Structure formats: C-alpha cells, structure tokens
Length: 389
Image 1 (cartoon, rainbow, N blue to C red):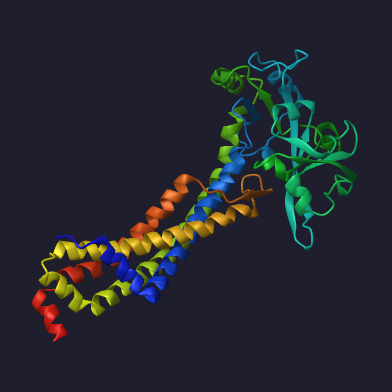
Image 2 (image 1 turned 45 degrees about the vertical axis):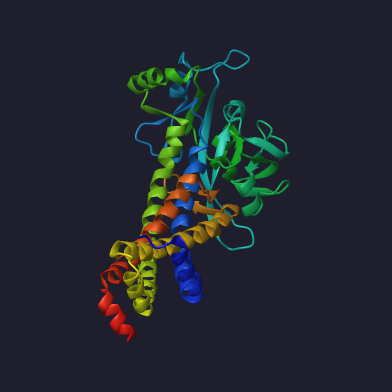
C-alpha cells in the first residue's frame, strides 16, 4: 500500500515552525543562486544585444577591444572599398569610422570616479545602430564641441545632464542630447563628432571601422579578404561576435564567484533540512511503527519522507525565485574587464534560470532528506512499538 499524499502535506503543516525555518533557509540559497545567474545573464544580454548580426567590426589584429585597436586612414580607405558593404541612399558605402577613448568622470552625489566610454562617430553611426534614439535634445553638430550622452550616463555622472558640460581633451563639451539604446552598452556611452575627438586627443588613427553587409552570407568572404590583404593588419568580426567576447570574462567571473557562495550556503541549507527530517523521524517513531503495522511497506515510508523533503525544497525554491524576480527592477554597474569602462545593466530572469533554480531547490531537498528517510524506512515494527511502550 502507498501512504496518501495528504498525510505528507498535513505532517508539514502540523510542524509549522520547523517547516518555516527549513523553507526559509532553502529560499535564501535559491535567492542567491538565482541572483547570480540573473546577474551574469543580464551582463551578457546587455553586451550581446549591443551588436547587430548585419554589422561587421574591423579592428587591428590581436586587439581584444576597440580601446586597444588602431586603424590608420589608409587602411580605413582600403576597407571602405569592399564590394560586400551595403550602400546608403546616396549610393555610398554604409560604413562608419569610429574612435573609442576612455575618460574618468565623477559619479553624482559621491566622490567616486569611474571610466566612461567616449565614442567618436560620424553620420553613418546612427544609421548602423537604429536601436539608438534621441529621447531629449538633439544630435551634436558636426565640427562643434557638443556631445550626446547615454541615458544611464546622464543619470549617474556629474555634468552629463542636458545643458550641462564636461571637460576632457583640454576642451569643454556641451551636452545637447540624451540618447536611449535600451538594454545595450550604448546607453553607457558618450557620443561626439569623431573628427573633433581625434583633434582633442591628438589621435591620428581610428579605433575601428564598422560597416553593414549587403547580405549576412557574405561575411566569410569579406572576412577572408580583409584578414589576408597584405596592405592590412586587421581582424573582422560580426558585431554580435565582438560583444559576446566582451562579456565572456566578466560573466565567467560572476558565475564562479556566485557558485562558490551558493555552494557554501547550500551546504548549510542541506544540513538544516537533514536536521529537520531527522527530528521528524525521531518524533514520529511510534507513528512509523503504526504505519508499518497497518501494512505500509518500507518503500512507502521511504517515499513519504522523501516527498516531505522534496516539498520543503520546492517551497523554498518557489519563494527564493519569486524574491529574486524583483531584482529585475534594479540597475547595477560594473567595469567591463575587456574595455575597462563602466557598463550599467539589469538582472534578467529567464525560463531557463527559473528551471535551474527550482531543480536546484529540489535536489537540496532530496539531499537533505535522503538519510533521514532511509532511517525511517529501516525502522522495524517491533523497534518502533517498543519505543512507544
């Protein structure tokens, strides 16, 4: 015979305090576990979403980021002649020559400073990145000391609100617009005229060349030609591939650190569940003997106690996951270790992360209840009833 499921649920309900304490411990572990995965995925999503599969980014060979790359004007002109490049409405190559520079700015309301990315762009840069849109103000005028700042930069740094100004490159630059690029890295950048930035920083070379393909299938051909052209020392990557590489190092660090913390916390939760289940077994020896005397076998008893432990884990998992879901409303910032610039992003919850969290909670519950359940199943009828006497 099988022990009814209602029996298991009622036992947990009758022991409200121990059940609540065990569930709370597991919920905390699942909260940390989910938060780590959401943090890592949120960073990756922010960086990967920054790129477009139709765009190709050309950098100096062996460069790990745009900040470290240099492409001179001659090489830029050679790149612009590639037949795979899409054309704009005027029949000209849809290509942008850009400069990337890092500066430090003060955070609002604090004495702390952080690296901020300056991107020198031209007219095609806006068309190549349609996800970037002005929300306040206007675009900078070509040839002027004017800049457009990302929404997250305007919120977090001094001098970056509309109408304010910041000083860099021995010039003062007026903020004439605020741009919003959604959940991408461009929301954490400052844009200005590439020629003015090059003059201000005494940079005679570009950082990278960005262009749009006529067709995505043409990428292998143009990549092979550019990387094997003796006049060039460059590497070509899709914009998606580039930003994915930018996220890998930081994502790996977050996951490793998070898993170490989760492992420590989960060990405590499993021990807590084990203590709870051992206590249940000790307090219910007579009850177990009665069940055995009524005809319920060892397997039924084992299953009933394992089910209790599983329910404890699932309850903790659901509460922990539900609590971590509110983290999606929080924006955090960190330094991108590839570009050394600050990037702001949000926690992101996905169905896969939710499945991992619930599965992890169930495993903790079963792990904590396995030994106590075996102890309950091995009790003989005589031993149990003798204890009652």
